[in-house]
Image (cartoon, rainbow, N blue to C red):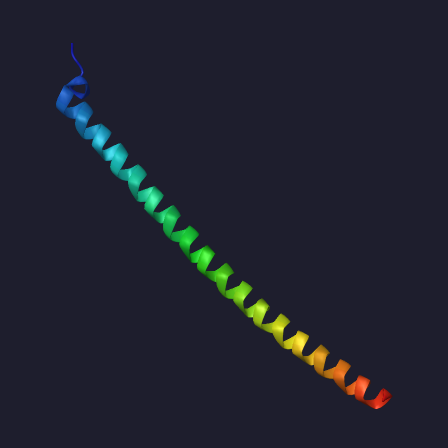
Length: 70
């Protein structure tokens, strides 16, 4: 008795279905990674802006304290 799943057409269909599922999983994974990267990029940009603001505040305080010493 032969198994109908052993026919080349069925093997090919099964292989195509497996590859389609794998490609879909990879697309989902890539989308998640892109979202994560974009979120991290926003966080880094926000932190950089905050650091620049703090640097400016420190410089201002240093100039104010230096002016009082003259």
